[in-house]
Image 1 (cartoon, chains in turn brown, orange):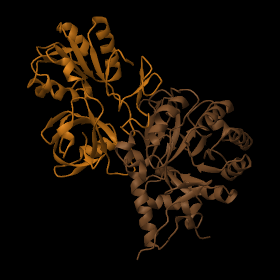
Image 2: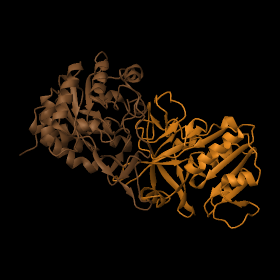
Image 3: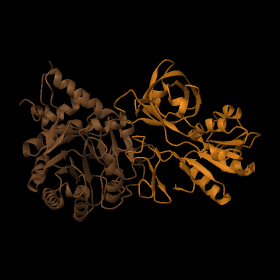
Image 4: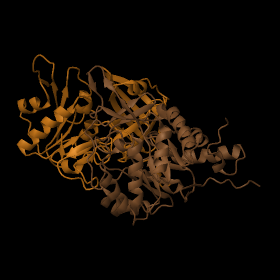
Length: 305
Length: 265
């Protein structure tokens, strides 16, 4: 008889049926993708960033393809927390999956306002986006300085009813220091990496391809950087980690888990394959079976050496 | 309805029936589809996926024509992705998702004098539109220099070509852009359906406003998801969008066809 394989993981006391979730900004609030894939299969849906009021985002072009990657400069366009609570959250609650709300803001007050508003809602976790490279104020400014990161973590924790995940930027010199700063501020978990700041120039027109000039690089091009940073953050802090950055396959996901992640997020791959997450979940189970591993949690940080 | 397995829509791996070049860097690709062609409406588009996985994003390509289960895409090679598609031979496969987007509101054109205004690679999506509205439609096709698809439009409607780099006006072509042709030939319309580069659409939008003609514009934008989730392909809208709650609309999901008075180009 086959032994029962355990694929569920725990992050800050919240149990996810499997370690695979959507990466913020690539999956909206799940509404559109629900026509293409079964949201019930996912460990969690991580929503697009939600602000205190509607944000219009950046001008277009907002997208550019690069080799094995893509740049985006959407600029956190979102309808605001009230619309999210009244329309998107009830939609997500129809599904048997965890709901993680990504929170964005320009000021500390913005973040705290959204976190406080969500404290009375059926949300499982909060992911605080202090690492978006595409907005001029706030965002990444809180995520590139350890003192500022610790301070905003402490501030949002005061208003949060749910576990707080701080989403870290890779656009820093020392990711371990940032992981420790989030921990000192009281974060319950960290997620990394957000996109790497990049640029693309059209040499024929001598113009920037993106209206915003710079954008966030995602996709398999950034995966080795992301795996390294997850490994370093895992060793620098004891916090549970949600690893992400270019995951397309179960093997990619397992690299992050072996490097120290408890769960993973899949973003850009959804654009290539709307069922990418379900495929990855199936293939992780096959891997566990192949190697006779009965509990996926035993793999976190289990790389030799 | 798109291709579905159970209750979910999915991509379809489509066999190439034939492909040919119909102009400089312009290709006509006929594909056998299980369901896409059967439900595609004029003005809708498909996402086409590269076999080279280093090219992450699918390419949005408008539906040019359908014939039973056969789908025709006419596109211009603009980079490595579309160049890969242009090398497809009979019997090869191309992965598609769709049809996506809203398409032209053909009902609005029923029994009216319809003017189709197409510019460059914005011409192909108007061919199926012309077929549906044959009898009451005139097509004005704008080119920089080389003319393509003209004879195929002539099967369905009178055609006037506008050739930007032409020397002199001829019987079936005028020098200049599509609006120059409309004015020179005094083409009246009850409704306009247009597709082309943004500067052309902006001019058509202004013309329609001045002449008080209802006008529908098909927009083009870089896309990632193609289904309205990522917000990569928005355009500006005159009023706050009901879904997005800001003055933007999603070209892939809310469009690509918009009433000219609802978008700011």
